[in-house]
Length: 110
Image (cartoon, rainbow, N blue to C red; front, side):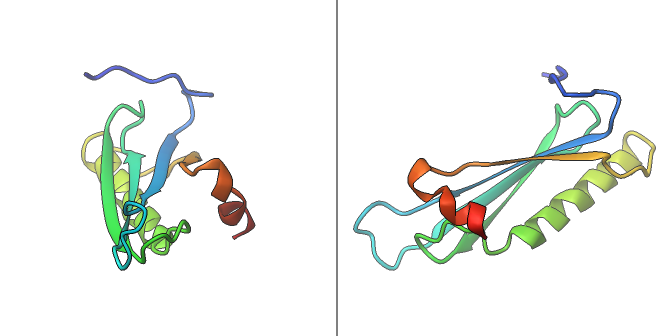
């Protein structure tokens, strides 16, 4: 599509990340949960990459989040260097975390 998104300050180098966990159906014991992280890689936050992991079922805290964010930021920097010809890191990280209302206290207290 190639369209730019609306940002708080488009002059800054923003990196937008979003993470969520999907759980197995109720009653499906012993099944894993799946985590995902998407992140923008360009200065207009129009191009994104994604990474996914498997973790213990019904666990809302993303166990590998640190590694996933490191991977995403590395891809951001590689894209910026190869395509946009700059080595500048993001000025601001904007992180969205999907969770349901009943379990929102768990991630907030982590």
